Image (cartoon, rainbow, N blue to C red; front, side, top):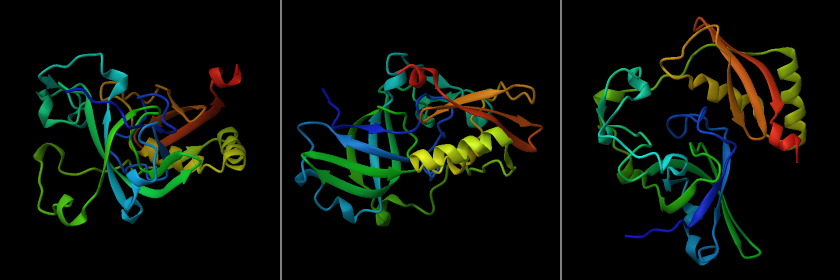
Length: 238
């Protein structure tokens, strides 16, 4: 079986670290899916605008060459307990295929190009898309579904504090790009991207979001502090 991507996603997540572990947790994060030549036609998306949400089937391209093991240590279990890879959503799978439900904000067909505007996607920039399917509420939503290893999700309910410099930078970015950058950073950091084995109050972390490097820390689980937001080196050099 040989598959080829039908599109790629353009998102603000430029690296794996910092991406929410499931879709929908950072709903303000918008992205666009560009259908590739051979698939970019109005006919292929006819009727899709009637969907509020869609399924994205994609390739974990950033780790597709890393191989897999039968058991993994899920971050949700503290990184200490091994379970079977098929009982997790780990990207290190026998076939590195992912599945995410995202909100469809719009379908744009113009000048021979097709783009799908989505929000809440948990995909890294340039991730190849294998297929797109409509989300069907009457069958895809299962109210009685259970999974004991991941019964619920709870974001960090702590304040996200931007220092004066970071706050000013947010205002500049918002004026320049129209991105709700402060809201996006808040949603992402409340998902707590820290590895389970590196949760030190003294440690400062960085995530690359859009063209910016965001430096932050969490102190005693009581507050998240955003220290700086700076344009990444590669952007400055171009």
